[in-house]
Image (tube, rainbow, N blue to C red; front, side, top):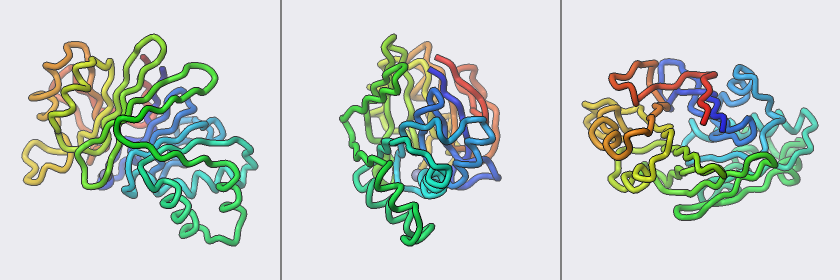
Length: 245
Ligand SMILES: [Zn+2]
């Protein structure tokens, strides 16, 4: 499994590319506003994408969908793409694309013909079957302002990767971490002294996460600024970095 970081910034940051990543160059996670730029910067061609997963409907996670779709449409892509996300995914992304580019152009027709919107929710599973390695993603909800869906991904060798998007710490994550994923890519946008806990901080992982599995490595993303961790099992990702399982 190859996880390539396309961006590491949160909705508010000091100019970092927005949080997104791609698994094996084919499964794109999140479509932030700068997604097309980040794909090219990281040498992932938009035509390689077969599945898209959007964790929740905040702009830094999905406002780039019309630009990516327009890019594929005007490039003459004939590939069909599955787009997974919370309930309302079809309505949200279709309306956003209309708002971005209007209805009198080829994009609405291209989306109608090439995008299959698939709503998902907590306790459901997605089978990403890209013709090489099939992956199963078990969906769970995080603790955020709007319905936000993370996943625990398994390949056929039982390598486990966990994506923990926008969230404050919630004790229900202990059950997921006790399954000992090798890698957890998580929202570490918070600071230990935040008055209102909207995002997790390094302190949450030090206090609650590390003791649950002695092998799991936590990678922080969705950041305000680049930073360095204080613990060898906590790291911060940067654009273009590849994590191999
Ligand atoms: Zn959010």
